[in-house]
Amino acid sequence: MLTKLAQVSLLFASSSLAAIPAKTGYTVTWSDDFEGPQGQGVDTTKWNIAGPEDGKQNGEWQRYNNWNDDNTHLSGDGQLYIIPKRNSTGVYTSGRIESKSNFHCPLGQSMIVQSEFRVPDFSAGTAAGTTDGYWPAFWMLGASYRADPKTEWPWCGERDIFEGSPFKGSNGICAVHFHDGNGQNRTLTGSAYYAGGQYHTWALKVDRSPANTAEHSLVWLLNGTPFKTITKGSLDSASWTALGAKSYYIILNLAIGARYGWPGVTEEMNFTNWPSNDTVTGFVNSMRIKYVAVYHSI
Image (cartoon, rainbow, N blue to C red; front, side, top):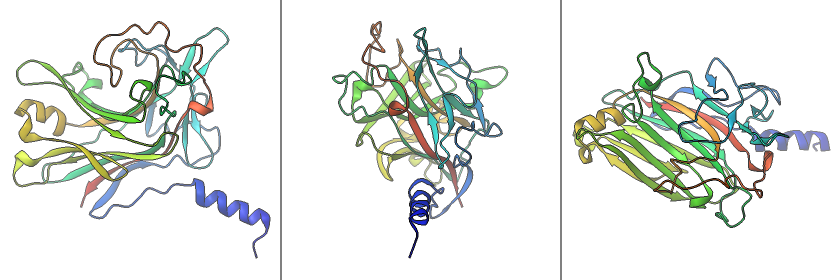
């Protein structure tokens, strides 16, 4: 018979530690399970930590804190917390991490980029007010964006695996942003319903394995179920090369406030009151990530 202490320890171990899931036909080529002592910062051999002036392209309000154990730190039970805060002078701080590695799907193979996480509960939409201004995201940028010389956005390509906002409630948004062969900046989007206040697994599969190259694809999945597909055959050659054949790096962040780019908003809006007086900061509206993994087909 287990003692109370043993029972508690067993429950803690079984309920909080998340192993990287195996996938039939794939091998894990890169991952982070965020194991480590409570309060410790992320593994800086795997991640770059954004600083105060990073991520301002959309007119965001937050200052990303690059003190590696403040807004962004390990939970002690196999998670990474990104916690939004507001200091005594009214300045909002948050966290953003970017993988040091770039990831590419070779011709003839497929690659999956996947993470399980929980975000602020947007199920009440904009009515509640407590999540006003929050914009969590799991996404990728073309590696050429941080090369020297740099390829500007959207020529570099962007893959958004998940974005959330009060505007879309319980609909998670996926998207790609790119510059097409006709010289136009383009955005393609999709969405999937998810239950708020829970952990979900979001993934993007880059599939370059079919013999018919027109069938090469980007496929977005929620909890293992596909909800959006873009094929090479639906795009011009230059667009597919930028989106499907180039290297990308991973980004996880919790932005606060913005003037442009909000998922679900199609035109510039006035965000003077976002975040609002009702916005709740702290752990309750944190982004909590169990793991990030990259798989390549065997």
